[in-house]
Amino acid sequence: MKIFISGICGFVGSTIAKSLLAQDSSIEISGCDNFIRAGSTINKSILERLGVKVFYADQRQPADIECVKDPDWIIECAANPSVLAGVDGTTSTRQLLDHNLYGSINLLELAKTRKSGFILISTSRVYGIADLVKLPVVVDDRAYVPDEMGMYPQGSSKLGVSEGFSTAPPISLYGASKLASEVLALEYGLTFEFPVWINRCGVLAGAGQFGRPDQGIFAFWINSYIREKSLRYTGFNGTGYQVRDCLHPRDLTNIILKQMQYRSEDKPRVINVAGGVQNSMSLKQLSDWLSERYGERTVAGDDNYRAFDVPWLVLDSSLAESVWDWRVETPIESVLEEICKHAEENPNWLEIAT
Image (cartoon, rainbow, N blue to C red):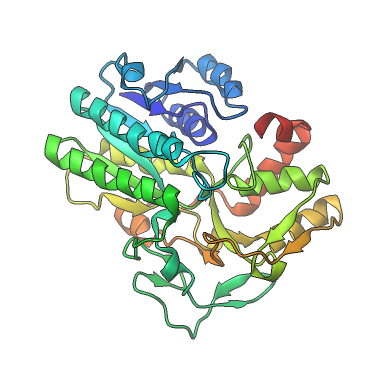
């Protein structure tokens, strides 16, 4: 089987490539990257030593990927994965859409021409913010948790947000670009008769991630905490009680392999693949976990409201469990330990990755 991965030198793309080869060494993997993310060149030599063909290409430019020869599957991992993209003053809305939407269109055109299957790594941020902030939560053990007595919006429960949750705006320009890519991918697949799978993920985390405050928050927080850099809880009264779930992208590999080997059309094309309640944590809990290992650090509080912030965003992956027999294999504590080990071994990681 031949697989082409876009954004292959990013954290998610490179981890999926390595994990696929670890499970099936007969797979032929190639991929492209435009290397605009700080630190991404590090993964190129690592992948090449494993026999992966890596080349420079910018998927925003159709001519750059025309050289890709007949992959059985295309996995799209390239994206600007931040709800602040296009609005924070560091990237334009045009750049965001060029990366996350028009780049997807170019890959879908490639899939159409080559008759390849297509897998899109999507995001929890396609779900509507207006309903996310209505999720009933209470404070328990330094974190927001589901309120057992609350009224949940359609498509949600104490297990988290399911695929039936609202995707109505506002969802951020980032979320809109990924949701539009999802819709186009499904339409391309139906129209031109090639298989499409869409995997919506929460926070993806692990060793070697290029963490920043707006993306890769677990890696950024751990590296910053260890270096005694300034950290701040933003919003929610500056408490740090906001919660996200965490998934190692290595755990995506099992479901991706099953999707690529499945030949029928009777399974849902859009599915949550995320850490869930059991793999979730607040920033305050993360700081306290780190304090036990590295000592107390001062974290400032900032009550400034940001339009895209939500108190509790955890995905319910029950559908993936029932349809694909998929489960989280890497507990959050193992993910954190892995990031800590990498941070200790790479003391200049923040300078490399930001």
